[in-house]
Amino acid sequence: DNGCPRRYYCPSTDQKIICPEGSFCRSYSMAPTKCPNFSNCPEGSSAPRFRFSGLVIFAIFVMIIFGVDKFLEYQRDIENMSAQTRMAKKAKVKKSMQTLTHWMLGGQVNEMMMSNKLKGFSSKLLPLTITFEDFKLILPNGTCILQDVSGVLYPGHVTA
Image (cartoon, rainbow, N blue to C red; front, side, top):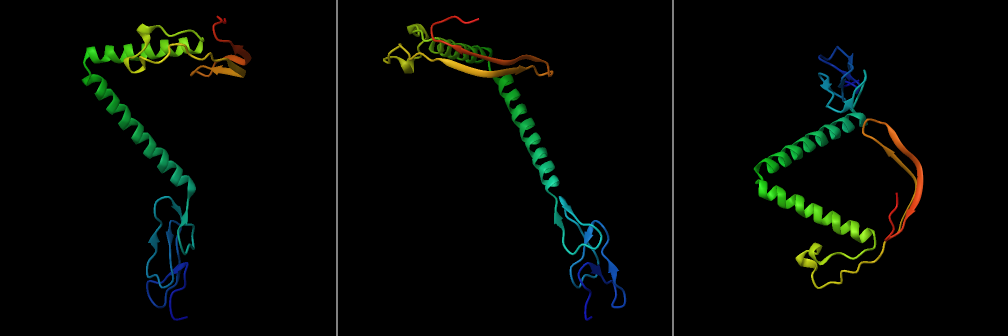
């Protein structure tokens, strides 16, 4: 044989050593090459094997870093926001929820609740019937408070 075979490394022409675990050895290797991150190299490897679990762990790590960054950015925005701006945002959310509630109940939206962008449109909205089957509600602590609940919510009717 005129060279060192794959899966082995040859530090000299008269030595042939099997590639150790955590490394890989291509043909003509004089020393083992360290297995890259997110790869697996058992003893006698000629090439690294991709490890899917390593990629998943890396992806989760990146998502956590991204989420923490976005949360901190949100916190900075809230801290820099004036009390008046915070009140305006809360009022806008409240107005949106009232409009949605009236629309879901099939009622008319009061002109005072209409935003300036919607003026000129009819305040009469189409009624919406909501049907649900096998509804389940689990609290964040794991307690199930509703299970297998089904029903229909009709527009303009109070349902309890």
